[in-house]
Image 1: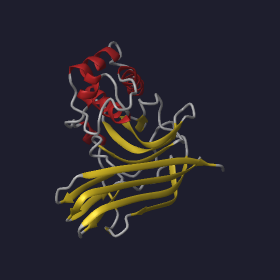
Image 2: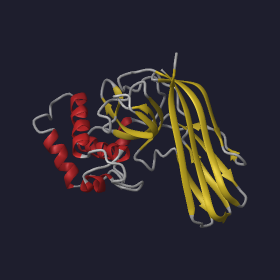
Image 3: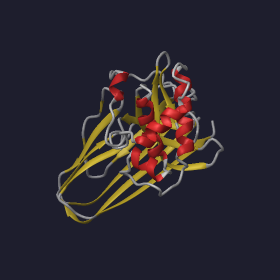
Image 4: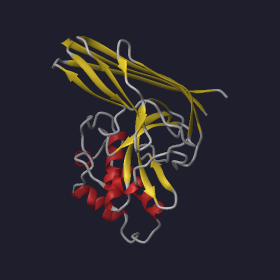
Length: 272
């Protein structure tokens, strides 16, 4: 499948700020599931640092504006050829060992509700293959947290989402990471794009899911929000310990000012 990407992020400040420093994880790495045909990130007026690939295999680029700034626009345009690999991450070069992703963060720290969910889901399944247990946990998270836009916010933790009893893709991913850790399986947060849900419903937004490491197979993606593994409708941008760590754009503003954020994401499939 050929997917085109248009992703524009605009920041407007109520009064000029002294400058902006950002770290972008906006360029997807090549792997068997995706081949980059065209990709460009534009930030008018900014100084673009040298892009590098980190230990997790993700591309990172720093961006800075060292002058009084009232607004900034980050625009991504790209074309990617995708392939369904049943969610298995193949051909992705990285140096970080899987066990490094056993560490909980404030966003993925489990509470009693998450511990109970894992105990109930894996009861009698302790000796089941890791892949089976990973699928069971993903299905359990999807059932425990119905998808409800607006139920949570950008800083909601896995424990808070479980207490709320509903969430969005960010919450599903972070709760699944917490569950996998309790089952002694490395897991991480993945940011990216989704063209459409499994039933073909347009999905014009950034997306997130979890990857769980299964011995003998490697990293496998699980999208609890859509009850599937990533397929040709997905583009993988980057990974991290949680939503904050894997954020496509992270930044520092020099000087405080009220900020307005506007994001537009459009993913479309081309005829081949």
